[in-house]
Length: 166
Length: 216
Image 1 (cartoon, rainbow over the protein chains, first blue to last red):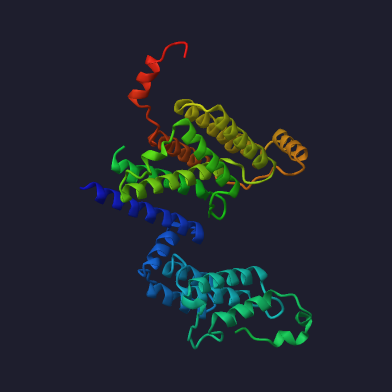
Image 2: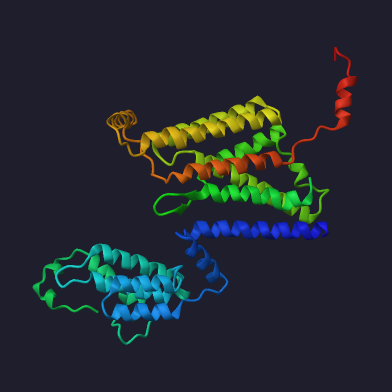
């Protein structure tokens, strides 16, 4: 192998390695699955397991939220798919919703998941046309989650018990 | 120095140091870039390496080398600089009084190294001892004093240290593997420093030194 080839290959490998380290610092992955999924998504090779996603959706519609999230974590192990993560955030919303009060911890987890989904979505826009859902965009879901976490005088309104979960 | 060492071994070794040094085994796991202060110290360390002959930059970048050779040399130099900063950053406690003390220790040591104008072997020896001392301070002394205490005597000692430092001693808790990971990083880093192209004294200058009259 000629010296030029060795040097050019070395430079390319070094730059790729440095880019990988910079990407890791920027994306802060928490597991090997997130690392591999993130890298696959970078080159457009990341795919969601449709069967697990469908199973998760059926459980979600039966209000089995934790089981649904478990199925979605199999479907989207790297947490890179905006649609799946939108459903995960929605599951936190529905699980945390209460007629008298909402669960702040679940709402916060939902908002956190939704923010990551929006960050991964092209153009930061998520639209899900599922007739079983009442909130179809990340903007609507985000507004509900944020409103649920706020402390307002309207929280004391007795008519609130007639509100419905979306 | 062979092209393979210059193109692969040096930059990849130092980038591996940067990667391992960036990993914080906290909950959640974090990838942390070097601090600004460690970048400053890293640049002083580069000066020390050049001054001591540990690193001869003209053997990595120069007008008599090809464009690809200069590219490899430049990448190796940048990787070395980042590794210097990352090693210092990793061995400095994360916050509070311990961070101040160890940061000052590094600064004083580097200034002393720069002023002493040591040769390559002595410079590497002093730097290696400094790094091991900082490792012991952070991962054994500070970790013991700031970590969870299970005995009354240990709790009393922690309360005393916290009181003496006005509550500025506590550190983020890392898993036990963090120390082993950092030790591995140090080993790779020191191996990389040994691989650096050092200053070569020419045979001609040595001959001149011999031929000089004793009273000149």
